Length: 125
Image (cartoon, rainbow, N blue to C red; front, side):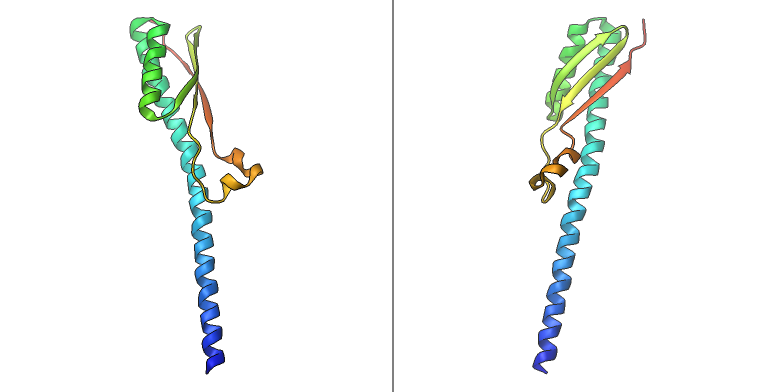
């Protein structure tokens, strides 16, 4: 009877450990997917706001100020902004995401996005 109980407890402990590992891996994968999606959405929002401002005012400085304001509101840093020949290009830098496993493994660190660049055409007046 005692051997049966020991085997049962060891099996339960293995199952619990396996569930914990699956949850941690799922969290890290979800963090990567959501980080990529979120950084794209934030960059797109900033580009749309700056593009609308440039379209309405015709001022690159005003558009850059709007982009910087939106970046601050979204918790990212605007690292590059340019408007050339009705094409706007901007790059944002996002804060590093807190993952359980990926942040400790050097060759996997590139999976979480730290910057995103987008180019958009701006309609002429």
